[in-house]
Structures are given as C-alpha cells and as structure tokens.
Length: 169
Image 1: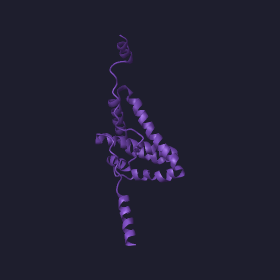
Image 2: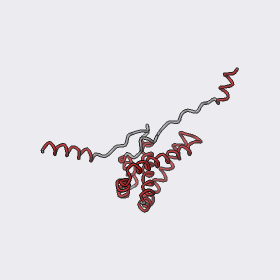
Image 3: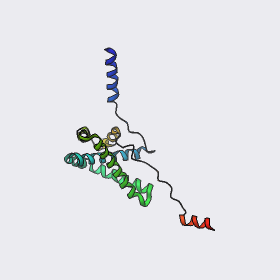
Image 4: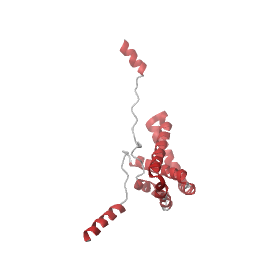
C-alpha cells in the first residue's frame, strides 16, 4: 500500500510540473512570438467551434495592444524571412495553426469543447499581458505538424531559362 501511494504521489508531482514547449526557434523571442500567435489561434478556433465568442472577445479586449504588437512582430518575421512572399507565408502559417486545432477538435469529438474551454478562464485570470508569453509556452500548443522558424530554401540566382541556354551551347 505504501508503495502504491509513493507511485501515485510521484505521478501527481510529475503531472503538476508545468509543460515546457519544445524550443523550435533559434531565438527565444521568435519562439515566444509564435507561441503567443498559436495561443490566439487556439482561442479563435475554440470561440468559433464551441461558441465561446464572449470569452474570446474578452481575451482580445484585455490583451489587444499586446496581441497587435505580437501580430506586427509575426508579420515582420515573415517579411524578413520570405521577402515579397512574407504575407502569403504568414497567412499559410495562421491557416495551418487553425486547421491543426480544428483536426484535434474533430478527433476529440464531444470532449473537445469541455476539455479545452477552460483555457479561457486561465488566460483571463493572468495578472497582466506580460504573463502571456510564459502562459503560452506552458501550454505547448504549437502543433508539431506546423513549421515555425523554418528557413526558406534559398532562391536560385539563375533562371531556369539561362541554365538551359548554357547547356545547349
């Protein structure tokens, strides 16, 4: 009996440990920026799929300036890494986040909303917006199927036509 209590206590201690998101970006600032974006996306999917519109609107109102600043940072990241394709890549990223969360909802079925809806209460009880990055990191909500901090393939400096012309000379 004593051994069983020890095992149960050990599991309880481990379960109480905060989850730390896998570091997928070389820069901690970029990692944090993507985690906050993933949090916003998760809450948006929950709002639309589970009818938590009031809670989502409260989240947006409460953290509006910080969320806007984060959105500008995400846009700047994609512009810096993808140039003119930055907005397209940014849109792709946001869509992939939402689709991954929607797939999870489909897999969980009727448990999805009750299981995930409590996050609104948690995020709205933070003392300030400065706690959002740590909160998002602790939730580990960036799906492994979504690339973050991926470096785009370098663009070829020569066009295909110029390469073909050289081969035929």
